Length: 365
Ligand SMILES: *[C@@H]1O[C@H](CO)[C@@H](O)[C@H](O)[C@H]1NC(C)=O
Image 1 (cartoon, rainbow, N blue to C red):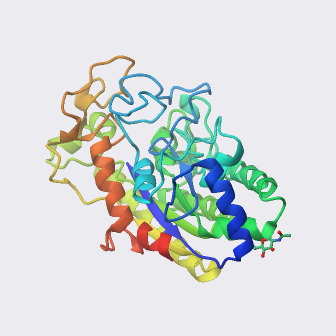
Image 2: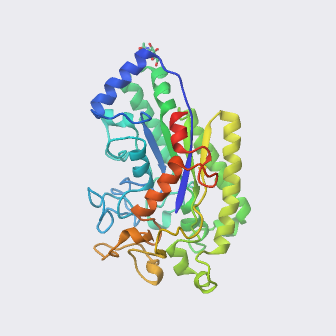
Image 3: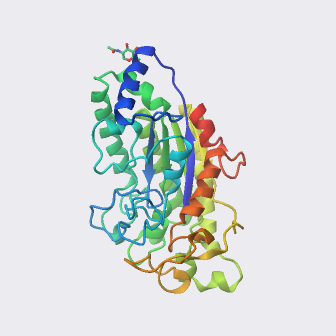
């Protein structure tokens, strides 16, 4: 699992607001969200269809993915909504933020989702599954979007900056730099080339560059998600007997590596806060056993031990009561779990959920 958060503000001139209002009305007639737009970067935890047209095993545009989603299987890697779908609802958007792939015209003014399943901070992460759009390329795509927004706003750069400064940006990535890279010594040399500390430092260095590029392009209110507790997902529980045997539901070696990354991430965010005047929000991984779910160690749909050996296959029969499961498949939370996670990111005041502020405060800042 992976989660996130962070952000900022800007002043506005009446003329620009008028121009923007016109476009918003054209895009969606009755919408009055708390922020004008919401841009999303990340991996399969928040991908909403960007991988549908590319050659990869990391795809979810087939049933039973989407079995509880109004539009069916859209490419979301869960039975229903992702955390950012629910965050968009909480922010007051009517209808979800659209995938970058296939969205053109004035609709881009309310934000886009660039996330791509299997992708990571590093370009090569996830290549074992096929093609994907790594974080660096997601940021490039956002740059292209900003050029289009500039044309929609008749080349008025002040108006573009004013708009982007009020939007929420959500970046949550990094799980695949471990799952589909560092932890796969047969396919990647990173674990031989770098010790855990050096590898975490390299990831943070790349991520810093990517987040700074977002800032340079106009992002001010950025929510940065921490890497989730991937030592506790059914996939890892199926790979390593030890976890279940010693009574823990998590792989402790992985937890230690992630803690390292988390500490560095926290440092990075504090640094950005100082240097760039960004307001940041960081979501730490949720505490162990969320008591509200009966089943926390195996996927609702999947194959093998803990339903955790591979993802849910086409037309496979999922569990009946999805609301009782923390995990939908070997890697990804259910809609029910995402409601809990998004709710915490949105308005929790616990430091372990969102720091130094939550997304609701980010929106209002
Ligand atoms: C551009 O936008 C700014 C504020 O967003 C506004 O004050 C200004 O009048 C606009 N310029 C033009 C030429 O429309």
